[in-house]
Image 1 (spheres, one colour):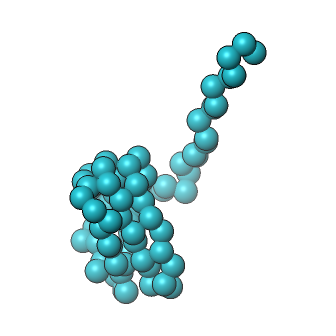
Image 2: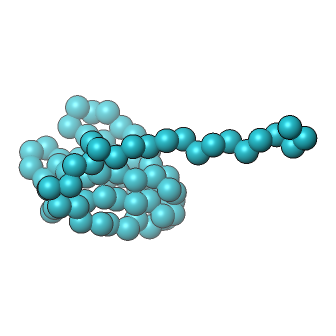
Length: 81
């Protein structure tokens, strides 16, 4: 299916597998965020992997998510260092 509007999907609990038009699949779990902007065409297939919940946040087309910067959280220093 296609999404009704461009949106962020925030996985709160549980896991789901998403398959896109080229056949590739990816599993999303708690804390994962996905930009779903396949409003036309083939869309995607969502397969829940057990119970869970997702929050949907509409995103305007004018928001340029390519400008977002993702950095890994700093690992805590080992005790005694």
